[in-house]
Length: 281
Image (cartoon, rainbow, N blue to C red; front, top):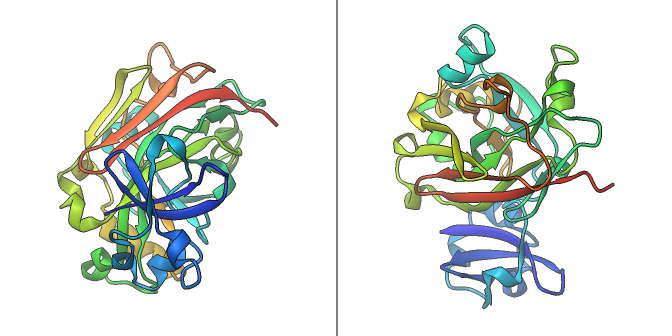
């Protein structure tokens, strides 16, 4: 299934499933039991959404990040070999983890915002996964059972702020600078995520293209490592890293400006589309 969170035409937030060019408003039917998609995932009740709710044209709603209210968003830096090489950093022995916050991401077809303070606003196409059930000290061979689904992610990065210090957080946390979506696709529909391919296009031109299997530290290792430090909760988001080809390391460099578009496509998952505007407030 393709799971979505969205606002109805009257701007009321809800959730449901996407089928073709429509969404089904399961939240209107199930909100007494499950107030949001995160609670559906936490209850192990994703199957309850099948064929539930009135159909609404997809272009009549505003898609939110699939899980708009995660407890935490953990991002993995330097996790594809070409990006490690282009950044001049050593091959990681452990995952390099930093955080984002829900206010820093928007949904599919919603503009991302170039921060007022930055003129080095970069794109990073990535695979995101959502945790499906709580776990601590998760073994690598059990990690796949803790995944609710996969989505595309654009890790909009203010490179100048990212490089003020060795800590990535400032450059990754500007409000509405990144995006996630268009939906969360359950693993049974995706197949083996390692067989899929990620492509990032800026203004229609391919800038990043890599198989997910190129991850330097794989998904089970990431989940096992992160869950050693803290409990992973249902609805948590893990963003697994970006391939080579980001704008900072191109020659000439390519930074995002208002009027540009970014598409992040992952086979069997979907295509996340966002235009770029200047920060509004």
